[in-house]
Length: 113
Length: 113
Image (cartoon, rainbow over the protein chains, first blue to last red):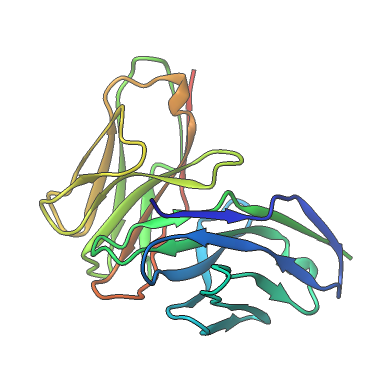
């Protein structure tokens, strides 16, 4: 079945540092890929998405590129802020019509001032 | 602009008690989902619905039941609560069509003593 593996945390960074969170997936066909972010005490919010190979999703300075050859969707940000402290989830939606999401375990990121 | 609303936000139950979690969405979405979030495990799908009057099992359905009598509401029931069901529960919805993201509620924190 479909599955997502993402880099384990926690990750602690200083402000303005570069952030990378690795995500790889296993799925048949051409899934859609997502990054969701969860701020403390809140639900998940869509951060960015990509729906086909070589697509690049971007939002709020974060980027991720759909790499089918390496089955990866790594999240990057060039200069993090304290406000980026959150839990980040990589997820995929398969080609079935029910559009179920399979999530990675989540990576907790803490940015220090 | 409510989006997805979950009721209640917190609840403490004793083993063996029953309860119902309510999810309501005002976006006229066809698809609705119930997940549970446990430390280090990401989100796991409990049950889902692809339209009014339909329900289907997800990855971890045992001990839960659901109903979708109205398009805007998706109820999750615990008939006889067990400590293993202590978790944070999230509801999500999405519109029809490929590549659409799921929209999440803020979650219900449930403790079973």
